[in-house]
Length: 381
Image (tube, rainbow, N blue to C red; front, side, top):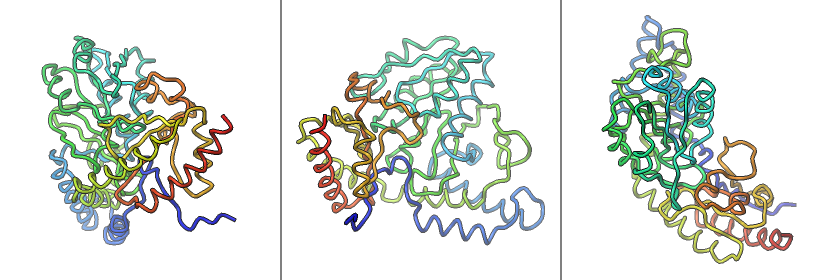
């Protein structure tokens, strides 16, 4: 019989548990505002006013205009809308796109689709810390480059890209738009949206509900919608506005940015503690750079398959992940390979993701279980 008395969740970068206050706001909005926000009667007007209030709160927190907020079902849709919508709209200017080797699958998916339509995608190199060099961007920018899409934080390693510097550079190229996937950044670290044309994120990464995300699109940009069919909060995404989800997103974002720096420092201490303990093992390699966000710690146990370690820890009710939850079923991590240039590390990496909710007791329990699993599995190498 399993003697574990509690569960240790260390997969916060895949999704976070919903905050009870956020869930409560969803339930209250569902009951209080039953009308369709597109309807002209009083219930519809009341619903629309509540959406406008929530949108203003979100826009104020992000430092953008209310008219620049497009609600989506999550980051995957936001990323698709940003990339496909922009490239299809401005393809008369050119068909060249720049990206990095550390993007989410919801970036590579639409890019692959566009390549089949005649677009050309250039993947920029990264250094040993996983960062893109501004010189490499300059070198690869062309007169027909219409989009640069780079994530603020990689979901597997926690690598931070120099987003503000890239945004400043691209100001010199007014016909090239800049899209940033901030899914792993918003609500965790300080984020500036200044000079960024399009920004994607999702509520469930910061204790909100699944099924609601945002694409921030600066008002000087036009995009082709992916979903057609009628009036909504904007002309760029048709469908009945999901008022309870929108209200809950505003609540989750407000809570996430409250004392954000203090929460980040708390997670940093937990990350440093784990690093110090895990580096003691002969076959463990730390893949996340020191400058990565503290919420993600990627390691490799050489000679041990990621899924083997994942399921071994799961026997003790400890939950981690191998690659990003939305990655393909490939055992080799392309992100780890791009940064470490090491096939063995890329084929044996696991991701531990932390949160302000993570306790010292959970970390110690994880380390005890890790020790047991490590000794057993490395003996079988």
